[in-house]
Picture (cartoon, rainbow, N blue to C red):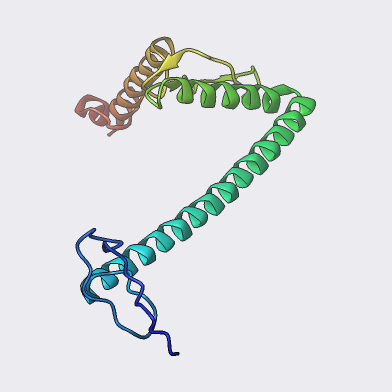
Length: 175
């Protein structure tokens, strides 16, 4: 006796949960109610695969960035220690640069440190030692010094120009 096969019937579409059409007698059982649902499900699977791939790519990029940052931090620390060992103006500048970077980070880059560099008597430099916060190049104290020096320079320049151009009286005396 030949037994008739009953088709397997799924009651609802896997995507839209709508009713399924009548099952075929041969082939695999249907999962989706139409070609449109099947195509949308394939697009969803592809988008999910792309999302996972993109997340993996982002995680790799983050790991690379973190490794670069750690290497840069180690290199900067080695340079800082070498500068401290050198002493003098080099060490003063290294300490100032580290403090300046910390100040910029703490204030969201709104304020840095005064960039005034102290001079010794022979025209050399002691390095940057002023640690006052400022939004300008120099703190208020050193800005006043710069303003005084600029005014003195302008005064001397004007005096030299007036001395360089002889007056008519001086010309008459020379003839």
